[in-house]
Length: 113
Image 1 (tube, rainbow, N blue to C red):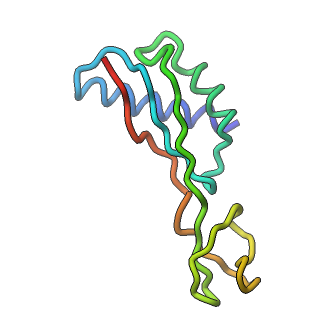
Image 2 (cartoon, rainbow, N blue to C red):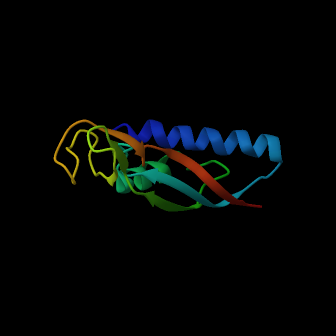
Image 3 (cartoon, rainbow, N blue to C red):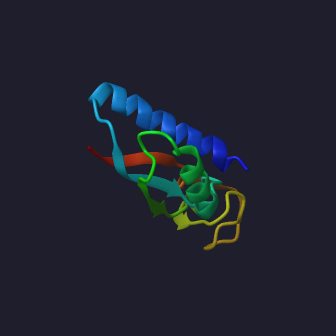
């Protein structure tokens, strides 16, 4: 389950931010997860709760902002919604479709004290 290492990375971002911005508690974490990122949202929630125990983010609410997968078809040139990295263009049925959005997973915002 790679979500555990992803959750540890999120905690590292939070701790780095706490050191540079001098806060001591995190109430809410807004995490943007792209449809093509490969991260399972429910597994991420579970791992986040486990990783933050005993830290400044213990008890913090995790708000997930889902972003849609997008790609550009290299055959027809259209930008299309895709749910998987290696699927054909939903408009023309051709390959390849180059992913252009929905690949990210990043901390968007923190509510802190």
